[in-house]
Amino acid sequence: MKPKFHVTQNSSFIDTALEIRITNLPPCEVVTLKAEMCDNLGKNWESFAELMSNDEGEINSATAKPISGTYLTPDVTGLFWSMSPVSNDKPKRRTPLKPLETKLFVMRGQEVLAFTSIIREVVSLKVDRLPVRERGLIGIFFYHSNAGPLPTVIVLGGSEGGLRESNAALLASHGFNTLALAYFGIEDLPKELVNIPLDYIEEAIDWLNGNPNVDSNKLGVFGTSKGGELALLSASIFPSIKAVVGYVPSGVVYPGIGQSGLGLTSWQYKGQSLPFSYGKVPMEVTKKLEQAIHTSKPISWRETYQYWAEGEKQAEIAVEDIQGSILLISGGDDQLWPADILSEKVITRLKKHNHPYNFKHINFPKAGHSFSAPGFPTTQSAMSPFGNGKLLLGGTPKDNSQAQFDAWRRTVVFFNETLTSRLD
Image 1 (cartoon, helix red, strand yellow):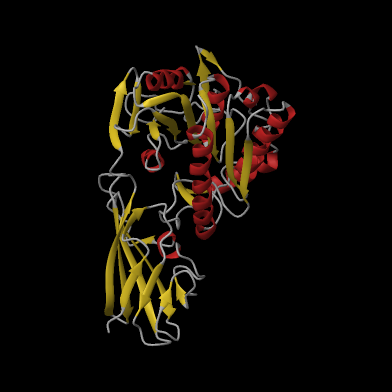
Image 2 (cartoon, rainbow, N blue to C red; image 1 turned 45 degrees about the horizontal axis):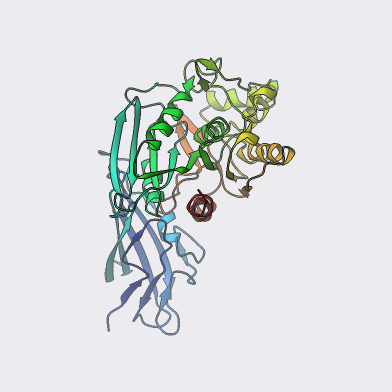
């Protein structure tokens, strides 16, 4: 009998951890399990593991320890998070919701013993996609057209700008409506994250309230990094937001980001700039940062942001005014900014004011700043290009992947508990 693949599901959502089994191998034989994938930018990725079959001639990805490979401990997700790009080719046209086909091979040397392919979906076929370009808003609305008014979540990206479409699409596939909302860094919106009007979020809420597919009593917001800061800030001002998830957020308003950013705030409302924190940074911290920039060494902004946070008490977000529950996610090795400390500031303030709704901060000690929808490769999640150098984000590929899966599961449960079961 020929070796054979057994996969939990041949077609599944990308946030599903898939167990891969191989049967009909000779007992105690070493083979190579290889994976190939073309992502939604047209870039090719690969991973592999050398594995030994057990006495029954089987290999199970949940229990088999690789002899060598791109991951080195038993892990059902290892073959997926440990993928690396095959080449440095320039990305092609982006198709963020394209189903990702992953090809799996069992090999003895160069001989292919078994082959299968699996499809990993980013969005359900039951979800409709509507581009939004009206009333000054730019976004993508994911909705369930025949399900009646549903709980709806506004999804905000961070300082990368543009749309966080895959997060919104995947969350919508779990039974919500979502609005992936751009707020800068895209045509017809501000180029830089400076003085962004919160009136824009207010307009988005008003647009959702007028949509027959939306249950306006069950609105949430989900933001990452600067988007997490924006999510907390928006919910503190607009009482119709009843649930907040912040991935690596800040409970303090920081300076804007861009050519003119440091002297200006990130946000304004009704024409008034909001206070921002820009505390004094010790000379040794500044020198260390400048030296890293000049020598093209990996740069960590963590210490700088930590000192900035202490500069202006009025820049703390009035999270006690949020009319709903709050879930904060952070990484203990976040090297971009101290989201763990910033999240604890939020928790301390909520406790001080006896916040009447549920609130929780979950810290993943070994994870960094890279939190997103799970299931994608994380081999490039610890660093990011920054000018001529690299920006440290923190964590390791394995720890970041594990944290993403756990955080995402908790996020879906949180929105289900706070919005779906919420009484009108």
